[in-house]
Length: 360
Image (cartoon, rainbow, N blue to C red; front, side):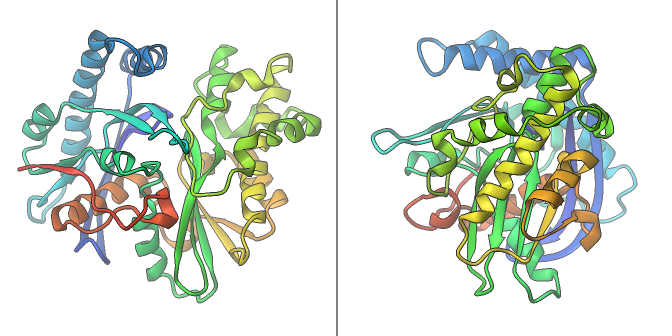
């Protein structure tokens, strides 16, 4: 799995029938080198400039696909280095999201994940599941989020009888909510690491706010938060989705480096808290996954602003950096079995829908 933060390829092995998670295997990470990251960022910018108008930027896309094949192969090899079990039956590869457009009442959405499936299948050496989002989008859904099927399987393993929500903090934040009656509800809540990383990098202060130090040294401009949260998107009913750049670092223009980091960090937490207010039956606790949970300032803001208990994935025995990679392994098996991977309550598609393509 390579997320919109473009920091690494995460790989994970699980034992599953696509319904239950039976066991967890090894995990691995292959970080992008600076030059590889630049190739992927160039493809993202080229996709944004193109925006489905005119001929696509083939050269930028092909360069990115080559980087993705190489880095995924190396992540796969690291994953299996000490694995003594059988060869995995299938691999699920999400591809690199470079552009996402949510549907409107008079227009279907669009989404693009870069992958060269034939080369990827050859590099991994096992059957490949890919292109998980397109079918949902073609049928009127948002194509996101897709991890809820896996989040629900993880939540079933918890003994706690109270309701729980899983919050993934990647470039964008998304939430999966299991109500007390067992029903599933999921949607994007707002920006997460994306604008913060962009802000820090734009100031030449690294690729992200390490340990939340910059945000911790700054002041949150609450007036800016109120203004940002007044955007109509936040009052649109879920399910709903965001592109990584729908809310970006330019929001904080005019603030100091530290104040901008603090306010963008608080914005992510405040948008989650705002989303939770819309629930008729709010969750009793929030389990935080993804890279954002490594930012103590962001976790602290969540605890201060959300009206429920907040804990990290590790608090419940999960591997928080590997949830998304595990999710697409889970979805690969569901794709093989033609089981639904999206539902009306997760992507707004009209009925439960299978998805993904297979390359045996």
